[in-house]
Length: 485
Image 1 (spheres, rainbow, N blue to C red):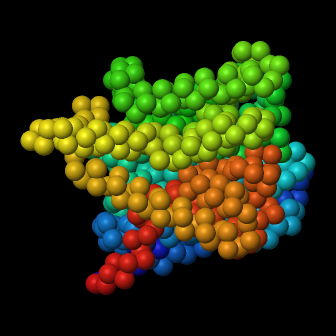
Image 2: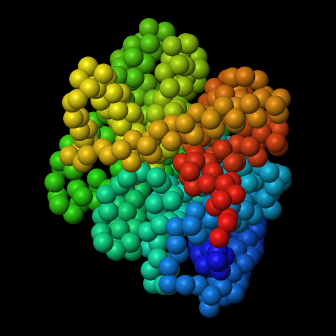
């Protein structure tokens, strides 16, 4: 029999975490004398109360472990619940935005997509700006992974949830889930703090540094200004801090943990994913630098900085903008469009296709053609000394198929809401890859998603969660057989 009590119990914990997090922007608004602190306090109490009631109501009914089937439902329900709870302060705030826009902004934050419906960010209350960054920071590490550090103490097993949220085959860092999650969280917090300090040293205010530090490591891209990172156009040093930490957020956190535990730089230097990632960034950045030097009067270093920053921002699915790269010509636009899908490494905060899958696809193609040449040959493909098994090939094949079908379906659905072809196709791509800005005058790096119809925003909400959960976790719920006992 399928039992919902354990699901509602854990969802309640997630909502409580969101509610407690709201007290931070409430305190900031109270410090600055902004009346929105009352909204955050009320939303916090509401979320904590609802989450607490769910936990208390289901506490006596939970079993010792959440099974795999319940894990799928829990993963989806938790994203829905925290998105609705996180939208409350935005909906009731002084922004006077619709519920649809509040949910869109929250989902974009938690999935670290970075698409926004808000403008006039420079004049926005500090608590709201901080809340947007907190949503991305929590989403970057994964609200489920964060909660998993606490679940073993509450007799709720969690390995299934960790596997559901990301289908990547990542190395176990510890035999205990709690230890594994704490290691990842500590590394994530440490890198975030270092990023914030460096932003402050090179010219940002503490408020800007804290906000950008959270959204940079989360590869989310929410900024405190409508200009995004172009606000700091005069400081190339800040751009390079952003480049380094966007790149750091897109690397596998398992590699960081091995590096810290074994103090062996080879954990990163010999990682096949990271090598491929560096190669792609170097090639794309070189091409864009040459293009910028050709069409502008900027020198080599500034052209290199702008090319590297915008390319790394897109390929890591961060979404910061430092200039309108749509003005760099058709060839540059195509490079950015391909970079949108590529994404970072498996086990990172970045979205997209991921380097692991890219490597598996190319090794699979290579093995296929080698078998055509020598049908009796035994070919074993490896990544970081681990064999790429048929199960991995099958999983990547399914992912590619689901990505393609989902992209076509969402693009068509967006077009049916009245959007033009470029906007529909690029919005679908950025939502599924969790990037942020798209192409075209409406949702490009110089625009936002405010003018889109509400129907399009709801479609993109689903697409962002679908991309974050990597398709299978959400789509499996659509199978009638899944719900049969």
